[in-house]
Amino acid sequence: MFRLSHPTSHSDSATSTVERLESEVRGYCRLFPSVFKSASGSILTTAEGRPLIDFFCGAGSLNYGHNPPAVKRALVEYISQDGIQHSLDMMTEAKTRFLETFERTILQPRSMDYKIQFTGPTGTNAVEAALKLAKQHRERSHVVAFTNAYHGHSLGSLSVTGNQSYHSEYYGSHNNVSFLPYDGYLGEFDTSILLEKMLSDRSSGMPLPAAVVLETIQGEGGIHVASDEWLQRIQTLCRQHDVLLIIDDIQVGNGRTGEFFSFEKAGLTPDMVCLSKSIGGGLPLSLLLIRPECDVWQPGQHTGTFRGNNLAFVAAEAVLNHWNDASFISGIQDRSETLRTHLSSIVLENSEENWELRGRGMIWGLDVRSGELARKVIDLAFQNGLLLEASGSEDEVLKFMPALNIPEYLLLQGLNLFRDSLNAVLLKPAASKPALVPTKETRNASQGSSMVLS
Image 1 (cartoon, rainbow, N blue to C red):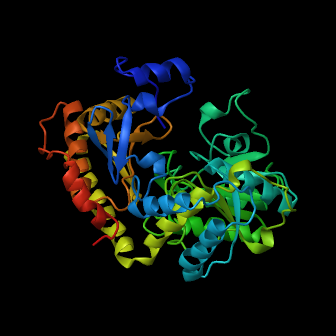
Image 2 (cartoon, rainbow, N blue to C red):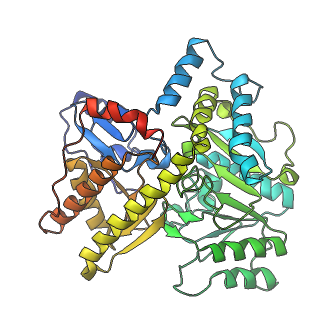
């Protein structure tokens, strides 16, 4: 999430072209007002040759970094052999290999039994399919969602998204949805009690829903982390009342929390799981995992022209192989501890501010209680060589999402850049002197090691 501001420079011809021709709806180019030319691993480079460390990762779609070598090799080989690019839902070798790799690498080791639906290029397509299928399967029209939820920008997804700005009379359809407080929304009060009461009381005013949809960690909502116990209680209530449980793992899945699925730690068995963003290895891919008994679609009942993106199948198969490497998985935990330790120290250094640090794995949020302050830090960090965004209802939570395989020295350097940018905004002396961003030669030398973590 971001607040709009105008680019600081209009001298570049590319900037002028974009301003002249592209819709005013554009957002991130206003947050990061540079023309980017190339990217490798965790470094983006502008057209002027200025390198930046990436703690943004395409809003979570680049968990394995920019242009992973394995993806580049696989795509070049596939294209050079005139591999199928577009196939709707026809059978292709690329799709078959992805399905087999996903089953062998992800589903079977976790004893999971899901059918896989390819829904189209982006995450909201998976959410739309899940909502439609849940209603059809249960023959009910109602859905329960939660405060601060974010599920996408198409009409069905907007109906279960919490931010008030999306709930105007003309912006989208919001029928048949009840919002209940997410874990922690009412402090120490266990909000699952409210769901239990609403489901049990036939005079509660809430119809028996087809499904409950939730994120185990709310990314755009401000990095709110649900406890395992709360998630387990929600699942138990769904089972007791014959309500389907849909987990939106679009941003916090694909290894972002340390496990491939964010709900593994809580031991959940969702009826449906929405996956997108990093599942495609940087290319558009969105899918819905469906428990076999819930797969009641008739042929062609839910379609999408680009559900057969074979280039994304190839890229996805390449990045899934990371999950066969124990050092890659342990490396996520190591980097998570680095993030947690350094950000915790920043909170302690500014204890008078009453900030809060929330997160798990490789997604952390620093709630600085002010969208204005967060934006000043983001802008200065960008000038200093670091890409960072904010989330939360007022964009008050600084959001840290570096690549899962970011080299340790770049992670530390990015954290130093952040600390110095924050201190400068707060008019405090710099706490450290960050080293120069590595040269191209240094980056190339370290690129291989960034794929196999130690």
